[in-house]
Amino acid sequence: MPDNYTTSLTSAHKRFLEKLFMNGVAFDPEVLRVYASDASLKVGAVLAVVRPENSDQICEFMRWAEAENIAVHPRGRGTSLSGGCVPTIPGIVISMLGMDRILNISREDFVAVVEPGVSTAQLQAKCEKLGMLYPPDPASAKATSVGGNVATCAGGLRAVKYGVTRDYVIGVEAVLPGGKLLRFGGRSHKDVIGLDLGRLFVGSEGTLGIITKLVLKLIPKPEASASVLVGYPSLDVALASMGRVFAAGILPCAVEFMNETVLEILTKTGEVPWPDTVKSLLLFQVDGSNDTVPFENARLSHQLHDALWRMEGVGKDEEDKIWAYRRRVSAASYVLGPDRIGGDMAVPRGSILSAVRRFEEIAASNGKCLIAFGHAGDGNIHANLHYDASDPDDVRRTEKTHHELDAAALEFGGSLSGEHGAGCLKDVSKQLGKDEHALMLGIRRVFDPKGILNPGKGY
Image (cartoon, rainbow, N blue to C red; front, side, top):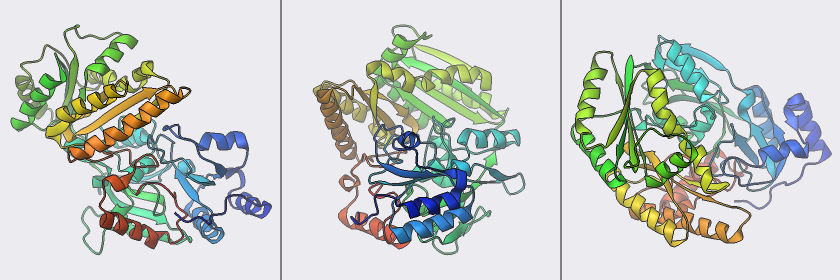
């Protein structure tokens, strides 16, 4: 990371920003404080916040920022759990929430053209009204933006069947440092001409350019769906049951797991329908046509014969009641402490049980309690640790545990992150080989020679 950034704004800098963005710029310390952090609760230093409304403004801004050697920190809705929005050095936050239009949804092409600030949930709802589906479905969809999902290659609940954000981005418009506007891909679902540079932006964590427009592939909306929440005496028994489901050739669109600690906090923080004998949960969803869903649901149910308890639902209203327990987990977990480090490591699907048990051992050895849940269908484990930031010893033990969990995930042949990205919290050199890491940094320099975009983030 270069060490010659401009880390304070002159009156001339401020006049330039005010002329370019007018009411879309802020220097007030109280406003800047909001943009200095994200959901990771890490805090950086913000010189100004700008909120562009069009790509012309961004082109001019990026020409100026590169010439002045000022760090630029892209931001969506600030939901990053890895510090992806937090300035590592003083710089200007560029909030993309002023570009939040859905420009086109086509029933003929099965594409959506959107600006990056669009709410993920809003896009999904509008597509579904037209009989189409945008499958990427992060659990925090109501709070996230599409641009933020693209920046981290968000996965989510339906990834086991439908894949992740990368699988649906077919066109990207972006502004590079220096102000050049480039377009990659387009509305065609298949395009093999040249290198797929647009895909590089997916998961790049705001390090290559400022995304201004996205073309997203859509699929037909399934006619029907059904969900079942099943309880087991332990996570061991639950994951053995899940293994039989896949071995039987059944591909649910979602499979979630919750370990014993999750059930303890759900029981402490609200009413639950399962009996005390249930210590671990699996949550399945199948979808398809009106004819096939009952058949698939019956096949699934047959493989869950060893469950102690189950709760079934068909259709949105019934299923929402079931999924509410899974969506309660993050909020309920704060009963264990006011602050949180959220792990999102991924391991091979067959290693989930061994990995979770190893993670629990590591946490206990440091006097911590591990909350483990996540996307069992693709091995994505949310290994969360709660602590009290006002207690230095608790902070030390929590950070030590977090780093040890990351190391353990790699021992299982896994990844430090399945969907949140590296941000400024993960040391990617632990996972990437020296030559591979160097190649990634070289590609980054091609797009951003002076290193002004989100320095110290990602890779």
